[in-house]
Length: 547
Image (cartoon, rainbow, N blue to C red; front, side):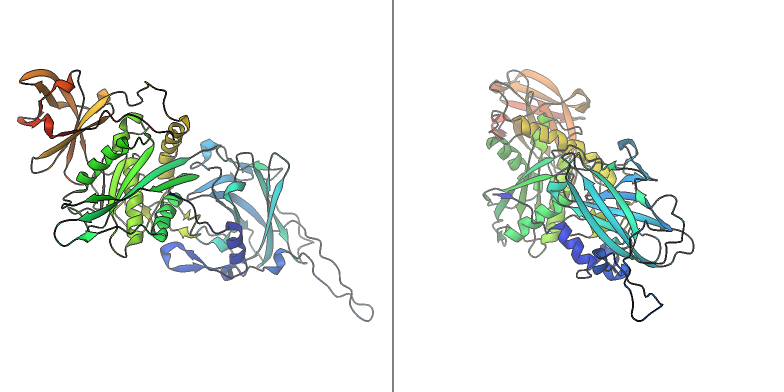
């Protein structure tokens, strides 16, 4: 079963807001940015006539009002928003990619906002904005909005901007736009025309600047029926409503136009789960056993009858490299809790842990280990106003923290959106390439993967994959033996987990590994010997099913 979007028509919702039928919450800041704030006149959006009384006889004569370009107001900038705000035109002109904050995707819902500037001595009144989208086939889409302008624009309130929406199927790379402002009543005819003119761009039309994107993310959710042999015997909540919530949270915060979430048949876990690493190791093997492509993410979902497993609400098996590599498919695995009646928390955990397997480290807002020092905001805030294209809420720039923090509520900022866009683009290219030709090994080799726990014990399995020279440790190595004879001594890669104290130790399988009977892991002055019979061999599972 592939999860699909549950999307209210964006244009219909924006019309409802303009008609004062539905408030838009000003993020989590606690205020309501309602249409009443701007006193939007629904009838004025479609009527451009007024009447005046003429003297000199009995009765009155109605005179039609011919709209004129607005006086004393102009458009400072126009922004498009699909999660993060991207200015597309400013100071009367198109903004090229080099001056933009991030990417805009095709086939994804889009909010447009026009921010105005008013002259000194402004007289509050209704102003009509006309927003037109032009396509290369000659078709257009025209939207109008009439708003009472009382003061300057404010990015934290939809109603204090001109705002328009496009449905996903109408967002295309070829589209151009203009936005113009008009008076709606008599009284400004004798005033000189405003400079700069009340339109964006100042002349003609401008590209929106949408990528010819094809952003596909594929996640398999694996429910775990859990019995710890003591007091917990549970199955996770995989109801339609909960799975839709998972879909919504990920779709809103990641740069995708297509999100495929598939619900796997449940697996059984009939022993105490001491650490998510135990489950992730099984899922890493499962993805190869089932022939999943290297672009596919596996996520284990479990109700452990507690708020944490070894102190964690979820854990990833690793943090693959950026740019992504096919030979790191074994790391695209994570898992997390779904406690009773905490579906939203579980959905946030899902986005966070899959974020690790997309290549993202923690972001520091206090408490997280191994955080990314290149993040631009020291306490984890997203840094600018965002917009949820499914919940239609503005996201406060400091109240909301990056989804890779341990804080709440979470959102995505421009920095993270820009970082993940090329990752998903590359994963999509793998998916579109189809299954490799017979005899082609996209994984480049095989790996022995060990998990070394703080108490000294370790678990091991083999998977398809490869390492780079830069990943290898200068001190860790594994000696592989067959009946006492040394087959090879391999330098190891050492990969601490994103959460917890478990250390991943990895080597490439040497020639003759099939003859091996044991190997020794050397770290510093310590050596541990592991019998090959205690290793789960999964590196032969290299067949990729048709995508």
